[in-house]
Length: 225
Image (cartoon, rainbow, N blue to C red; front, side):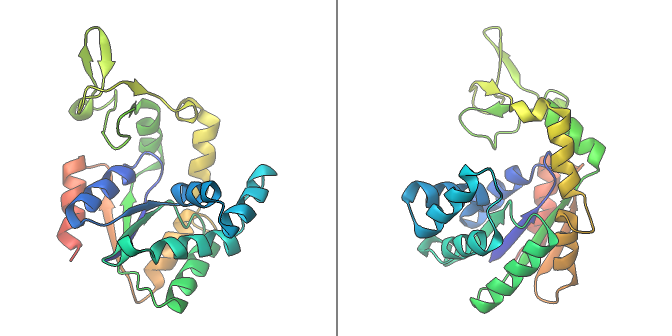
């Protein structure tokens, strides 16, 4: 079962990806981790990617997509995979879909977590990251997942670990820039989602991201084989 997950920053797609991973024992693959592995391992693609990154340029798709395909062909992906963080725009979606087809890899499901932009922004500014596991949900604005107080400190509600914030989670300009890309339905990430909706192969699951974590996961699990 091969799954592509979409959702704006703040939608909880990382949390849902972790829930799917645990239930179906599938590797949860993030594009950033693929870059780090290739660059750290000194692969040929990693060396090429590093040249662009060192110049402050975006790594082109003809390097990124082969790295992703290599990862999807690894042994732990034989039963399936969950890909998160790519594609980010329509061109990448078209290129990825063609590359998967050429490689004989089926895309079974596309999970879209739907969330209004203003709600996504509130979720970002109020979220707190557990140093032990970023998928432990903690948010100062939502009662169900509020951090807890221990010995005068606010700590993770799941494991009691230390909490931190990402600098760009508190930066309006950075948040708006990320959301400008995601919510762009002409060339951006929403255009990529709509492209996959136009295909006849994968089944697209659109779920309401404003629901609770449990309700969102139940809505996804109900549709997955």
